[in-house]
Length: 155
Ligand SMILES: [Zn+2]
Image 1 (cartoon, rainbow, N blue to C red):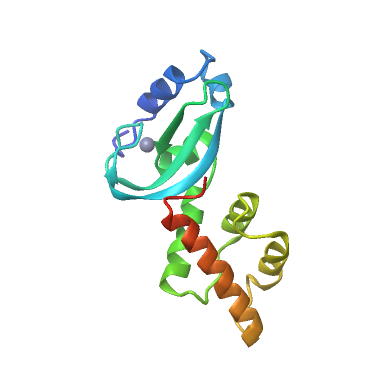
Image 2: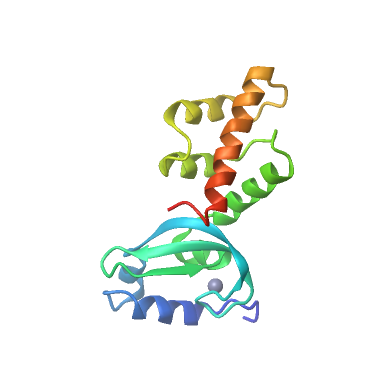
């Protein structure tokens, strides 16, 4: 494998920060804390460089936090952070577009969008022809999401 993502190294780095000594158990000690965008390119725990889209993960037992890239977080936690970042890019390019389902769930879970907005997202996500009022609501939601990312991620 020479795709620049060294899974063996990722495993070793994660294991050294976990309490468990076997990989399968160690994996379940970790969860996603938040996502952010690096101002200057960073290096993933697997040694891949550069990464701009960062996923901060933490260990429930050791409370150690580390940043990894999209590819590793998907391999490691099965979490599709790439879809969240794709949503962010989409609304940054056009504020009248909608974020996808994965982003909607994550930003609601983190309290960026409230329960009502979460429901609104579900009923209007696929719609292209929104009323003026609906469009205004979508833009408000999008601005909140973008503002949370600017602050270097949702924590
Ligand atoms: Zn990596």
